Length: 196
Image (cartoon, rainbow, N blue to C red; front, side, top):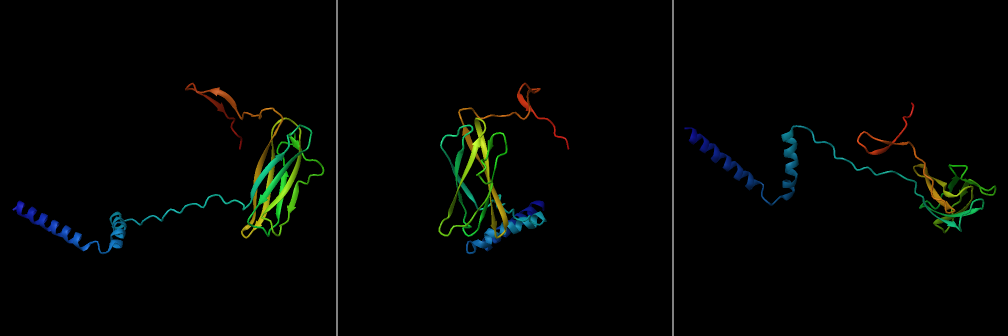
């Protein structure tokens, strides 16, 4: 009796599988592609998660810089930096800001403005500026250039650090912590804790 029941169930399963295979023929491939997702959702009994949206990335101001340093920088003598600024917003003014983080490394001569408004040009896509600085010591020094432009979404700014190598002195590096040996024998830098 049990063998007959198992045989009937087996026959019924084979018939259902054959019927399912025939009804899902190759005449409608779109339905076959969509069917597994629906079946998975029904089996899981849970709603499908929303599709993951890709981040557009960091939004930056539509401004590009190119620079060149004129001559060989020497301590105490003026150095000129030629700057090319390009933007697709040709009809907008660009506000330029020049600064030095380490005031002991470079200064600006009195004739050099540190905030300049560069007006749009009728037929040019690239605007030029020349910045003059006076190095106060040898090594690698940095001039910070920032450009600000008004876009349809508001004011946007882009900054760039221009390295200026003065003399033959190597670039100075300063350690942020103390070099110590760890419990496993490897060397590492111990950083001081910051107070809140």
